[in-house]
Length: 181
Image 1 (cartoon, rainbow, N blue to C red):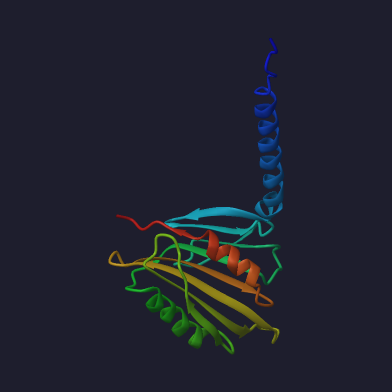
Image 2 (cartoon, rainbow, N blue to C red):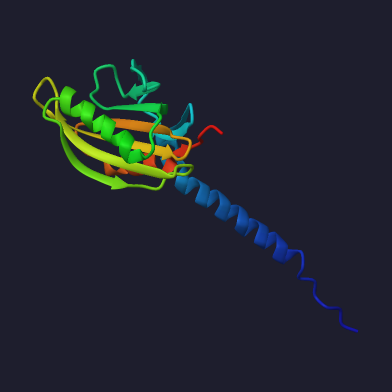
């Protein structure tokens, strides 16, 4: 009588080894991107910001917190987890544009587009350019999420020397808006 060969223990061991290798391999691929950004929560907003932008800057309401890479850097990100009571993101963005037309030198809108942000009924990004006090052109953008009928909103403001699509994409993809009930 011939005994059947036992193969069972080898297959699960190989499968376990393969799953472990894939898990560690895939985790290693995403690790550098995670180290470049850190999550920030303020009010009803959760969003990623560049991890290297650790210098906290003073902000004025409705902005709650702001960061830049160094004390002399032009790059900055400001966050508002309670931006105001607006019917739509477009209305909130319109208030920003109105203020900018009066207060920012050579303010020009480059692009306005609708977005999808988790927790928001409407969301928009507005890209613009301004000229600073040294007559250098800077690129800015506002990303606003709004929830109707609660009329609650959150916003992100980014200012950089040139438009940074990867930074915008990371901020937009990471935004989570949690309106109050």
